[in-house]
Amino acid sequence: MIPSTSSYQRRITREVKVGNVGIGGANPVRVQSMITSDTMDTAACIAQTLDLAAVGCEIVRITAPTVKDAANLEAIAAGVRAAGCDVPLVADIHFKPEAALEAAKWVEKIRINPGNYADTKKFATLEYSDAEYAEELERIRERFTPLVCLCKERGVAMRIGTNHGSLSDRIMNRYGDSPLGMVESALEFAQIARDLGYHDLVFSMKASNVKVMIEAYRLLAARLDALGPDWNYPLHLGVTEAGDGEDGRIKSAIGIGSLLCDGLGDTIRVSLTEDSVHEIPVAYAILQAAGCRITKTEYVACPSCGRTLFDLQETTARIKAATNHLTGVKIAIMGCIVNGPGEMADADFGYVGGAPNKINLYVRKSPVRFNIPENEAVDRLIDLICEHGKWVDAPPATPDENFHG
Image (tube, rainbow, N blue to C red; front, side, top):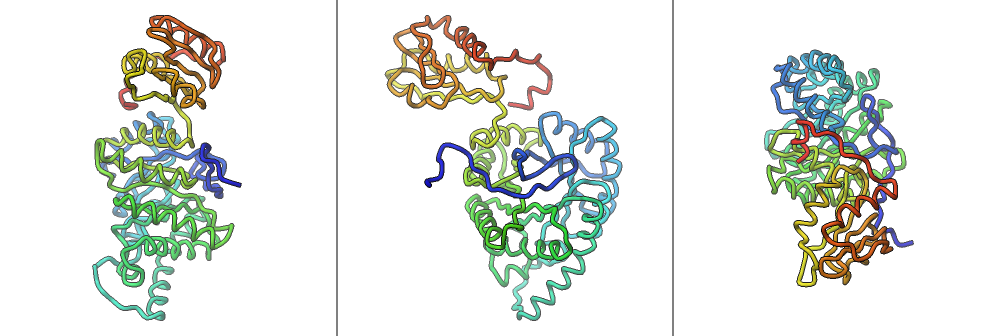
């Protein structure tokens, strides 16, 4: 059977619980982000976490570079919960296993980077014999085991998050600066966890180079499939250090979107050099464009040409202003009937130029209203949406609306 090219088909994974939020399994693709405050600034961390939760972030990550920072996660978590917010918290760990052990007491998930957790990055060129390589792995096992055991005991999830820019010297010298090295680095740590009976794992393969990132995730998915059905762990997608503005959004959309369309990905983070709240709407848009999580109105609109029978830009703006609060409704705005009915066939409703200053309205492929004067057509479109039970009134405006772009 030829796979469907018009519907989203997602890789099947086990569910990993992060507090009260499930990743993978039958859960929607989750949206997460990371605060930017100094972890010792308790009030700022609480405020940023609450701000992210308010705009739809489902999991919030906080850096814990030292044991002291990790210990302060207790106060941060207490403040967030006291404010009535149950968003799961993740501690981001690099270099210090001791910080991870402290953080695991207070959060719902730990992120470790296998390139620098109990491993080295000195840009040294060494040749490892098989025996020496195995000896290094045993040293890592000794350092990693206490964290795995604590997470298993407390029900804390873990992301094994490989970064292209921080592969260890050991991995670099055996596999090179490559997607294969990224994958092998993560699988080594995963095998240790599995040997201890711990399976609450999520993987990521992040890179600032979109091509490397895509290749690494695809290779990881293939390796997990080859290892067997019980290696069906969820994937966390992201282009690390994507930048800001248009560049960051485009890189994230290409990297994350390509993999989502492959059916890969169970949680995503868009990494922008901006306030974290601006990452969330970019993540609602990538998921929607990939067809895997519909959370807002979707529009199909032609680019305009000499056949267009009304001012397409002005009309599209008016329709969006009237309908962009709807959830899961797809509206097509087409300038003429040449391509209109065909190109908008999978839309719920269509607004199509039928004659100069006259509009035809469609329900999916079928025309249902004809020759409506243009100055009445938006209202008639709303009537049609109401008739089919898909209209809700817009909520009152709030200050947080600015976060949604």
